[in-house]
Length: 101
Length: 144
Image (cartoon, rainbow over all chains, first blue to last red; front, side, top):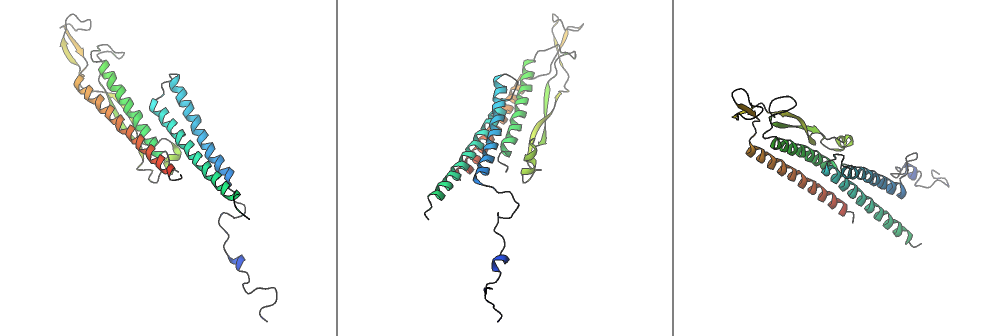
């Protein structure tokens, strides 16, 4: 017969299917932690920059006030973005941990 | 991610306008100055602006239209070519032999208008900062 035992009629369909995106071997895995750490790193960088600029004003180094204000604003916004990312991640984690088996 | 492009551009404009206001203030302060390090009366200073690519390097690549996104920088501050005004003040230590003193050709009214322009332009760019802040805030609220 053309269909010996063991070889299903569907044959090698699974192998012919394209790989699921994000699952390619060798590519860096991006987990929750990495995403959060990235957001935190960026927020922290901007915080440090804003800190230095405000310090510059307070020490009378001739720093433009608006430059410092914009830096603070950037730091604030990226902190908020980081918080939003964190909220989403925690929400997703809780969703998964509540999953019933 | 070009989250802060607008803020960057507005920041450059604010810096430029602040410098313009500073130069106008210097003109006002030296309305009657007859002595300068270069000799002669103070010359009225003028600010020349130049369109400048956004300073932050990643910003240039993040923008969809790097050519369109241009900030502003003060290109140079140059002295006005208008000759000094001669006023008859024989008692003045800087008077020439005919009793005339060379004073800077600065019109206080003109300087006041210029200062007002700088203040208004600063205000304009500050409101652009507010606008971009509101936009960023709204895009963050999308995630809520």
